[in-house]
Amino acid sequence: MPLKIDHDLCVACGSCIGNCANRAIVRRDERVCITDMCCDCGICLRYCPVSAIGRGSDPAELRSAVLAPKLMDKLSLTKPPVAMKFVQTLPEDIPLEKGPHFWCGMCGDVFDGSEDPLVFTAEASTCGGCANIGLGAHKVNRETFIAAIETNTVGPGKLYATNSAMTANRRSFPGFSEIAKGVIIGPLAKIERPDLVLFPVTGQQMCMVATAFAYETGEVIQGYAGKSTCLMTVSTPLETNRPVFTAGDHGGRMFMRLAEGEILVSFPFRLIPGLVKCLDKTVYAQEK
Image (tube, rainbow, N blue to C red; front, side, top):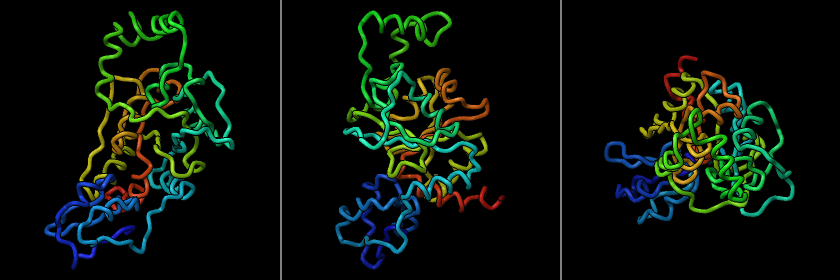
């Protein structure tokens, strides 16, 4: 385990359970136990009043280049996972996406095999999706904005009947705690310590993911439908450290080039090391 509990010292108060961002610490009978969903963040060390938690002998694997092929192999994924890493200072060593481009289109490029990470900003965004992934709005004049909404989004045969319907379900998702200057988007294997990891799965693969995630902690994965793919896959994992899945929306599926039977899973990166470990423990692993 990355972290371990000395049960001779532990008083089972539960302070570590309530403060673990990964929800990786659980009660088993009368004992408090740290599961493989631990990502080695060490927050629990600060909350234990009797110093019963210490470093273990098996640190969490946080190297993206190691995790990416393992995740693909254990799930038999056919498309490389996408990583997203939000930044407040644009890196000089990673090319800037000039645009116009869609966030979902950039993810689709990676799913199709594009190997070079790019930095995406609100200025490069073709649509309002940049606001839905925590980059703020792409600034345009009033007439251009109204024309875009009327042409693509609101009205008969489009996505919403009215402007109010378009904005109402935004309240179903958490707001962003900060607006990033940009986000690095590329294959998981090429981006160290990203914030989010996204990958398309079949129904069977989704069952494998959900079972592995729940295996030691009982946690469930929430699904969304009815809003834009970008908002449904980014805001909740980024702000609550909880994974989600979604069928996406019309534009997102098209620009991501998702196959008919594919749905999209989005995981906070800090949960990926535990997911990879637990994929070896479930009923699905025994069937292989």
